[in-house]
Each structure stands twice: as C-alpha cells, then as structure tokens.
Length: 248
Ligand code: AP5
Image 1: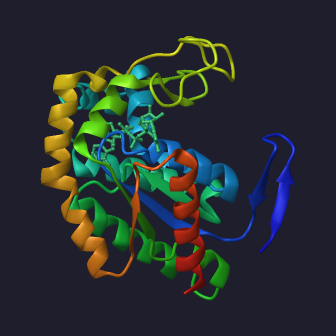
Image 2: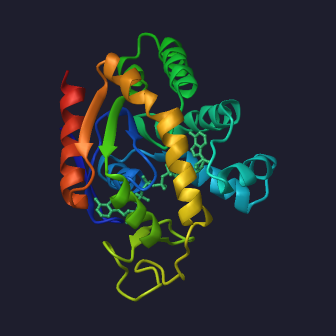
C-alpha cells in the first residue's frame, strides 16, 4: 500500500486507487461524518449532493432556486437535475483515483444512471487499467441506525458554514458552545433538521431510497455497518470494507 504523510492535515493519506465509494443511509446516519474521514485518509474527494445543493441554494443559482422549496419540505430534487450535477462533478480532475458519493444515489433511477455513467467512463479509458479502476463498480457502505437515534442526532446537529465540519451538541460538541473549533465561525442549524421536516425526510427515505439496499445487495456490492457505534468504530469498519472489497 502506498502511503504519504500530509503535513497540512497531519494525517497519513493512502495514495492508491480506491475507486468509487457510496455511503448509503437515512438522514443523520453519519454519511457526511464518515465521508469526510474517508476523504481525508484515502485522499479522494467527498461528493455530497446535499452540500452541493445547499451551496446552490445559498448562491441563488437556477438549480438552487428550483431545489430550495423541495429540500425545505423534505422531498427529493428530481433525478435529472441531480444526475447532471453529479456528471459535471465527476469530470473534475480530483476524481482520478476514486471518489465518495455521500447522499447519491437516492433512487433506483439514480443508481441505474450511475451504473451507466461509470460504464461509459470505463469504456473511454479502455487499455488504462488504473483509470478504469477509478471508475469501477462502487463499494456501497450502508449505515444502519435506529429511528430514535436519528431523531436525536438531527436535533443536536450543528455545522460550520465556513469549513463544513459537523458537530453534535449531544455526541460531538465543539470545545466552545456554538463556535467551530477549526475557524471560530458561529455554528448553524440546517432548516431541514426541524422535527416535522425530518419526519418527511424519513418517509422519503423509506419510500425512495431503501429499495437501493436490495439493488446493491443483488449486485454483491453492499456492506452493512452498525452506524450506532462510536464514530471511530464505524470508521474502522468502513475502512475495512473499502480495503476488502478492493482486494477482490
Ligand atoms: P443531505 O444533505 O444528503 O441529507 P441527508 O441524507 O438527510 O443526510 P444528513 O446530511 O442529514 O445526514 P448524514 O447521514 O450526512 O449525517 P451526519 O454525518 O451529518 O440531503 C439534504 C436534501 O438535499 C435532501 O433531503 C434532498 O432534498 C436533497 N438531496 C440531496 N441529495 C439528493 C439526491 N441524490 N437526490 C435528490 N435529492 C437530493 O451526522 C448527523 C449528526 O450525527 C451530526 O451531528 C454528527 O455529529 C452525528 N453523528 C454522526 N455519526 C455519529 C456517531 N457514530 N455517533 C454519534 N453521533 C454521530
């Protein structure tokens, strides 16, 4: 395994080709938390469709104006808008060793689109084994967390609008209440973390995203992790899944 030390972040970064990783789970399962840790350790980008959409809403882009009301009521943004957004992101140079999809795919339609997109990317790179591995069939890590735990995590979540770091007033509080440890910015609560919107997001998840469990299980790509364990334990099991699947 190739490893380099990044002085900037003070962690060891694994520099081998990881390929695509999908984090699947309900709202507040810990997808963003784990995606950041995997991204830092494996040196591949975290592609969070929720974060990209929220940035578009904040910047009042055409996409953001379409997505705002949908997100505020806990529904899913239409597949074609999200798939176009992901297609653009996958073209960026930092995806050349792999990438983590956090919050995508969320419907069977999005999963089928992604499979076709990855196949197209592989066929463009015929003869280049390394480039093909970067867009191989994904490893799907499903985080399993009970509804009541999710509800408590949502109500306690705070995030930094500057660096994106995620905290939780119950489980991972900042050193100073309401202030980001990294850059001193005031922490914010997401509007869709209100209790009634969370309930809608859960219904949307059960109806539209849960079928992906069978979709990926049938393809032999699914690894299930108990997401109620401490962050470090979840991380260790997620890393194990990435290492094992890539050894196949
Ligand atoms: P998105 O931003 O993706 O929201 P989500 O899927 O509901 O997930 P969350 O961000 O709420 O939670 P998470 O699993 O990342 O948990 P986190 O690590 O923050 O999407 C928002 C909206 O955008 C959607 O509703 C939809 O409208 C739209 N959208 C996005 N993608 C789309 C797509 N593909 N198609 C269509 N529409 C799309 O952790 C949560 C809390 O728990 C934190 O406070 C954290 O500190 C804490 N925590 C994490 N892990 C642990 C642990 N192990 N123990 C204790 N606490 C923990």
